[in-house]
Length: 206
Length: 315
Image (tube, rainbow over all chains, first blue to last red):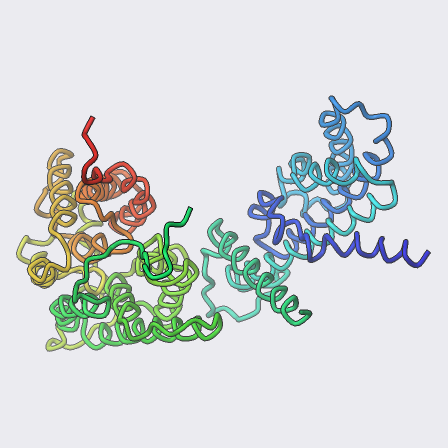
């Protein structure tokens, strides 16, 4: 039983650091680049993706024994788009402003390669509980990474955090940080930082 | 695969030894920039000196810090950071807040050079990377040009004047050729005085630090294309950052082609893009982006202009 729990924890933990979708696997970069201009957008996007990821992993895993191999991708897409439509309308109903600022990137979660990638490489091969846990871990890893990028870009590029001004009116922010190059630069430095940190940890273990 | 014998050490080319060192080349380029620096002190006063100083210090400091963090041996003494600092300062307006200069210097060194692995590995000209980032970040501060004013006539802080290039866009040719030639116009620190840059460029060519190919094709193609498009060609080559870019930035060893054919293509491409951006683009000046863009094409250019290996038959 304890071993089983440990295994669950390891699957969950995997998505957060060791195989962080953005900073390690470098997938799902398109929504990351596009919406990480502010913290609130990043968190919204991250949680919406997490919801879709958990649900789609769950259902894909549930149906894995009945899914014919040849048409599995269309089936995954149908499952994913069901949940994306769900979250799309939920956000439209309860968080219209966030929905508006995320714009087309909410429906585009359908083609987010994190979701399809996890369905294909994990949920299709593992049991239901484990797949849902993997979805949660990957989703939270994505949320954490995109939020970190969102914080850096919002503070440097707009001088605010969650819309509150940090430095006063005389501060003139570096506009480049909320433009696409700013996203690439931020991701690059975060990736380098994470690599340096984990490498140091590995060295100490030896 | 390896042919290496124990007592024979095989090293990669080049095998010809030359006394020229990185430090020596950088020193020559810095000497060549002295006339333009003096001109900038003359036209923009104390402020020009401060911008150049902060830029150099920013470059040295960020290089030192970065090399401390990643535990690489220090390369401060090869002069490349100082050169980047001077070149960056030369393409900034004199009224720019000093903290922006400092940030630009850090960006030049860290994002433009060090993250690629240091001098010799950078794809893009570091000073131009810094300038491009500053221009994208603070467009207003980067395009407020104080009109040139002589220190002996007293300092004006906010006499903003249109640059000759902005004038061209509006169809106004306000400055005379003589104004442009000696640098009595608005513009960035080091780019206005054509004659000072020309002296520096000729010095570099005579010292064989740079070949004449890139500056000649670059300025030549801008001249021809401008006249083709109905812009006063002399006005066009004397205004903006063309001379600075052609002699000192497009000729950067690391980011320009090594092959002689490649140099011609590189110069022509820079000239074409510069005129296109000036004439049809949103910005009045295109030198910075033209050179950066061509920097990105250098590996491709070199691949197609590789000379035949000695002994191989031409087809």
